[in-house]
Image 1 (cartoon, rainbow, N blue to C red):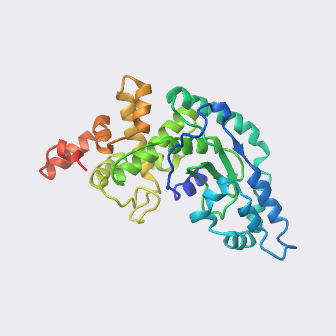
Image 2 (cartoon, one colour):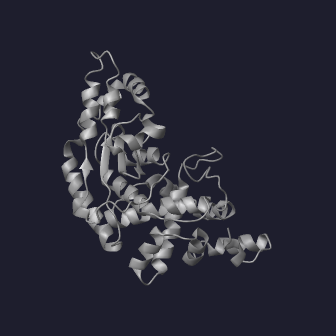
Image 3 (cartoon, one colour):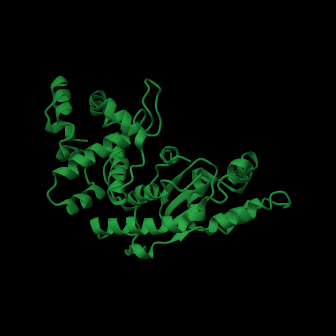
Length: 309
């Protein structure tokens, strides 16, 4: 499966957990857990002969990764069984997809080490490869990074996906759940994820955003305090031809501008991962200043007042 499609599915699962202190701070200790995929195929192979739902054991014996994938994704053993029966051939396409995972594990450790350089306090959670119901490419949970293996047709881009989720795991951002805050959450994960992996994982909204930047910047200024994300994150109203997730693009651009303005780049990464005030962060980036000045002039506001929640 192309990376962009995996990421598109991933974007629909935006409940994020913060880093736990119990995980190792050594990138070389990071764990890749694939035992759940073995349990899944064991259950799969029993489907035609078992009198009971074989996926009950997959869930019962599953790792914290499986447990973290139950809510909103797997739901329960019966839901999984029903989906597998319906899409049996689609599941079979991923049966050997993890054959080259050891090479990706080495690459991931290098990415983790890059984050350690930029952010020494980083914690490195395990990466769980599990099977769900074709509704999530992956997510971050309190227990680690979870990848929906059934979504993969190959391992292209999986390290960039892990890098993005790793940044979500490290984030400790504050503020109201506005479009600005959520765009910064996603865009900064793309920005730092790319910095440490060299992989740009979300090209479609970026290409569209750059091609329509002026119009979109002006629109975002009018919307960034909203608590509705429609047309910018996870879904669109179909009012035009825009793709999903333009918030990733504009959040990336704001984060990039902030990073470039800071003399101490290591401190900048720390601040990006610990945004205390999204509006102050936007102001310090200076990125949308021209559009904000036009907006406040039109609405007879003071420039500084715009950055108040």
